[in-house]
Image (cartoon, rainbow, N blue to C red; front, top):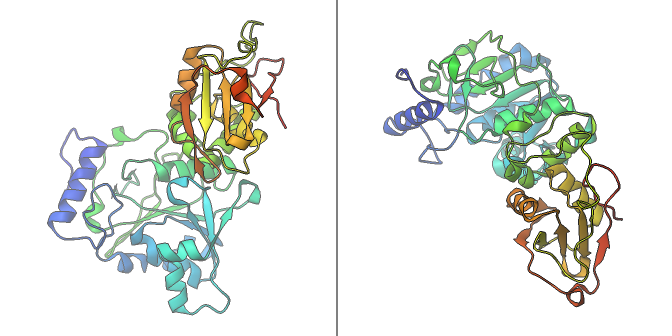
Length: 380
C-alpha cells in the first residue's frame, strides 16, 4: 500500500488507519484512528527486538507506553536491563523507571510491562539523575524503509527525544527502533519531514527486520519555536528544561509567547507599582493553587513560561495570587499562556482580575520587582 502523490502527513495517517480498520488488522483499542495502532502480530514483531545487536549492547532502554510495544517492554525487563517509560503526555515528568518486585516471575514481568504495571511498579526519574539511554523505542503510524517516521500527530515522541537530547541522555548515535505492522511501512516523501521530526534506525514488523541506514540528523534539541504556551503550561518538566536553557543563554522564544530581547531595559513607568489600594485591569487572578504551593515555585514556573509579572500579590490562605502586568495586553497574553497550566497536582484557574479594594486583600503579600531587565518576582 503506497500513499498517493501530493499527500500530507495527515493524509498518510488516515490512509493507514482506514486500511487497518477495513482489513481488521488491529486489536483493542479500536478504532485505530488517532492512535498508535495496536496491530495484530505486535508480539511476533517484538520477538526480533532482543536479537538486535543494539539491544544486546544496551543497558538502559526507553520504550514508549503504547500497547503494541508491550512485549518490547517485557523483553527489556526479562533481560534485566533498565526500562524507562515516558509519562503519559509528559504531564508529571519525562520518564518512569520500571522496577519489578524482587524475584519476579515471567508472569509478573509481563504484568509490569502492561500499562497498569507501568503505573504500579514505577518511580519517576528526575532531571538531575544523569541517566544515559542506550536505545530508544518509539511507536509509529507510518514509517518508510529510509527511516522517515510519522506518528499520530501530537508530537510526543519527537518532543520526548528532543528533551532527552536537552538532558544529555541521548546523542546522534543513539539507535531508534520502531515496531509496526507490515502495512505501516510505506513510502514517505522526504519533503514532509521537518528538523524536529525523529527518524528511526530499525523497523521491526511481524515478517521483517529493516535496517534503514538513515543518515538524516535526528533532532538536536528542543525547538522552542514549535512549543506553545499551552504545552509549556501543562508540562512542568518542559518548563524546567526551558529555564535551564534560558540560563545557559539559549533562545527559548515560544511559538506564541513573545519575550523581551536580551539586554532590553524597562522604564520606571513599566516598573511602577499597581494603583494603590486596588487590583488594576492589567492584573490576572490565578486560583486553585496547591495548599503547599510556595511563592518561589510559582515564580520559577511563571518565568519559565515567559509570563513573569511586574509584581505578584500572594494569597496563600486563599490558594490564589494576583499577577500584576504592565498593561492589559500583557495580562491577556499571560491568561492565554496559563490555560491548562498545572502546578503540582492542580490545574489552576486563571481569569482577568476584577477591580478590588485593598480591604479585599487581607492576608496578602505583594512582592517587589527586581531592578533589572527581567520581569522577575521577588519572594520567599
